[in-house]
Image 1 (spheres, rainbow, N blue to C red):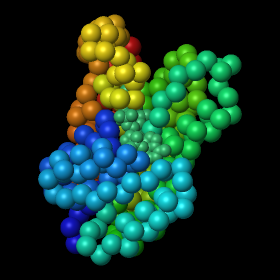
Image 2: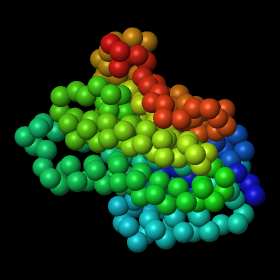
Image 3: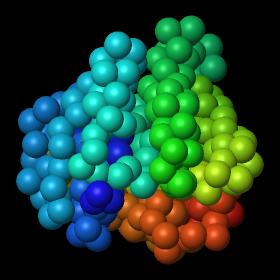
Length: 248
Ligand SMILES: NC(=O)c1ccc[n+]([C@@H]2O[C@H](COP(=O)([O-])OP(=O)(O)OC[C@H]3O[C@@H](n4cnc5c(N)ncnc54)[C@H](OP(=O)(O)O)[C@@H]3O)[C@@H](O)[C@H]2O)c1
């Protein structure tokens, strides 16, 4: 059976770059996301084949249908699950309504919980597997006006380590990346015109010890390292990839 990876949020940014990187390294890629056109564009760049698994991760019947389609395949062996999908909402503590919290909780954490719960028995049956969760530098060090996002990304870190402890005896590894500021559509600066976007980035660059914000490809390489056998003796690790912003 050909090796495969499941990636959520594969239609854009970090997830798309990760899909392409795994494809370059011989993995068939199951691409999850809502936007079918963007998933198809990413699939065309995945060198070792890809399947479009479009669904809203908060739509449980649709998610469960996709999970059973993937776990019942006999053509591929899923070796890696990348829980990457996410949304980023900036609001003050007072503006943080239950609805805003619930939405971030469902997309950013519960989608990973549901997929991990489904893939644990699959990995046990197939002799192991590797889970990579995408947290954030804000999960390690929050800022003002990101309380829901930061708290939920911190929960992702703790959840990863719990799964690493539980999965160890079954050769299931669980690790986490904690990206800093990465140039992807998740940031409002990406909706600005090019000149204003460059102005916003120029203001952010000096906040990083390495003097610049990151690219999706830089995160993809780290996710690949943690997902693939290159990191075969690593589990429960939280890897900041952040230009040094977390220690500044
Ligand atoms: N960029 C950064 O600076 C940064 C920093 C730290 C952590 N992160 C984390 O990195 C991850 C990827 O973010 P990104 O920067 O690459 O942002 P992005 O380009 O906006 O990508 C977000 C992805 O999540 C998917 N998604 C969102 N809601 C969904 C839902 N309800 N159902 C299914 N898929 C959904 C989107 O797919 P559709 O639109 O097709 O549904 C998209 O593919 C997120 O977890 C984010 O929190 C990003």
